[in-house]
Length: 123
Image (tube, rainbow, N blue to C red; front, side, top):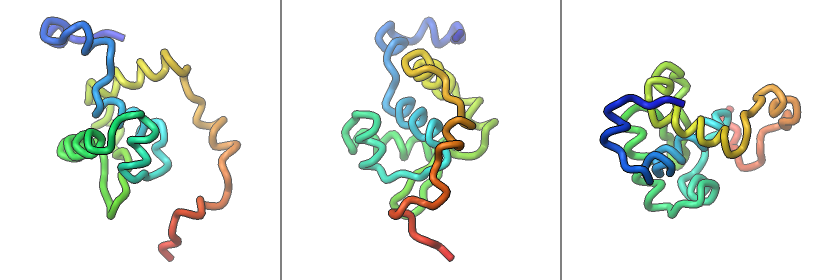
């Protein structure tokens, strides 16, 4: 994946190889875009402390990349906004390199038909 010249010149080598906490959080939420998560669940999944994840979520919300309701967080469904965020592209590429690309249809074939018991019925 390419990066722009400004990013190349102004980013350290370590920053180019490691995902930032916001990039990790956004990548996790994007990979699980059919669910909303609590901060502690996100922290557990990405292996970062809850305080850092909370800060990252606030910053991502300021950029309208995630949505927040009660104690739950979800990635935005505005695909144009996500695609315009360079960290999203970088996170996606690094996750795909490490884990392989995902086939959403394959996931959906095996997804349960009933909602998870932790999801409250809003009807």
